[in-house]
Amino acid sequence: MLHLFSGRVNTAEFPGDTCDVNAALEPTFVADAHDLTGVPIEDYDLILADPPYSAEDADHYGTPLVSRNKVVEVLSHRMQPDAHLAWLDQAQPMYAKARLKPEAAIGIVRSPPRPTVDWDTA
Image (cartoon, helix red, strand yellow):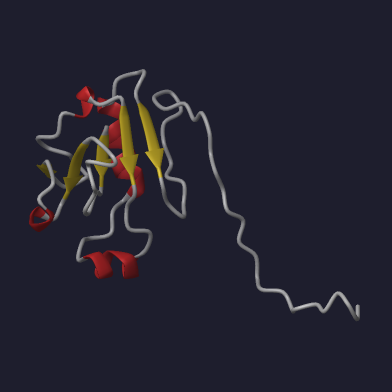
């Protein structure tokens, strides 16, 4: 398993290699996710990706905001056909359906706040 955009991962509890752009976090691989130079993507059957969701998140983590589509494109060209990508984000990146086949999605539907209703008096 590869933890992409890893930050700090307790690999005793969540085994695998880590990849982050920030060398100070001591990941297995220090690499920009836009090209993943030096990371043997082909060797992993599961990649967990949890990128910064917004520019504010990227600033908070001291990392650049990523181009979701570019990262997924790089991964899809290098992943083995039977490998899986789990992408945790607020937005679904675009991808080539010829290279990636979605198996599942968990979505959150956001709606505007509604007024509080007192059901005892309504």
